Amino acid sequence: MKLGIVGSGMIVQEFLPSLVRLEGLEITGIQGTKNSIGKVEEICEKYDIPKFTDDFNKLCEFGIDTVYIAVPNFLHFEYCKKALEKGLNVIVEKPMTTNYRQAKELSNLAKEKKLFLFEAITTLYFENYKKIKDWIGKIGDVKLVQSQYSQYSSRYDAFKRGEILPVFDPEKAGGALMDLGLYNLHYVLGLFGKPENVKYYANIERNIDTSGVLMIEYENFNAMCVCAKDSEGERIGVIQGSEGKIVSEEAPGLVGKVTLKMYDGTTESFDDGFSKDRVVPEFKAFIRAVNENDLEFCYKQLEKSLLVSEVQTKARIEAGIRFPQD
Image 1: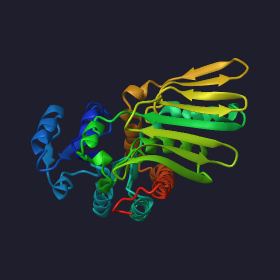
Image 2: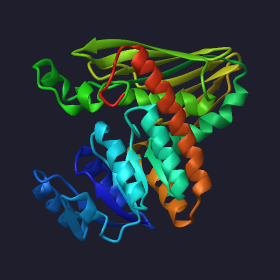
Image 3: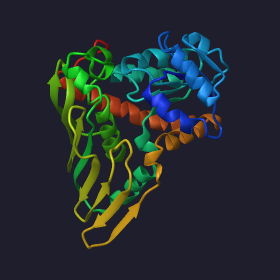
Image 4: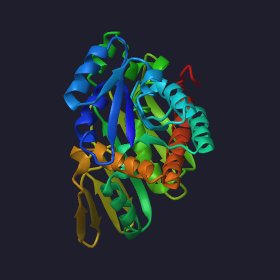
């Protein structure tokens, strides 16, 4: 895979030390903004990345076959569509798009052109998460599910002062549900599929949700998803069954160590150790799929992202949180 990166923010700087070590991946260039080009040049020098630019069309001329898009939410659709139209594969940071309509359009375009389109959602690629799937059949009838991700945002103090950064900006598809809440959705929907109903009880400040509780209804059980960027809380997953329970010890974006606790007293634990290097499992899967032309795998993962986008969009709009792109 010959990769070009769009963006130079925190997520790119966090992931690059791991990405440059991965086999089968060559990072050819990075695109930043005109204002950030000095920082982009420093990043390229640090990680021996040969080219940089502030122009997307120029990035696409660097001999790349795949673009990794790591820019604010409201720009995802625009960059994904331009890349796909140029015949490039796409890996896009979560959320894939602002709403379900956009996600469906990109999916159709990728399939029409037989290109890869991956949402970079770490949850789905941890062996710890896959172990939860293996264990669910052991705990009897599922009764209740909890997925909780609360993290006090470093930008919330500025928000309270009236400085609106993208993560809290309704004009730029911000909010807790679009950020931390997306991990909760992937955690639950990836295990149990499409729900019967969903309702988001949001705490709204300046027309954006800073925290909230998402209730997901299935035929025989309910799931509660808590997300918060304005306060701290537990980061955990719990699946309660009639014969046992499964606990994941970290936020749904990391999963962490998982433990099966049966009511007869038996326990079993598993930890793949990748919660400290979360980018590795997902990018290994992306690299393998692209290098082996495994479109079937890609489109199965894409269906999961489409379902999450559909449910997320419905819950958000019904809670009164609307974006210009809607």
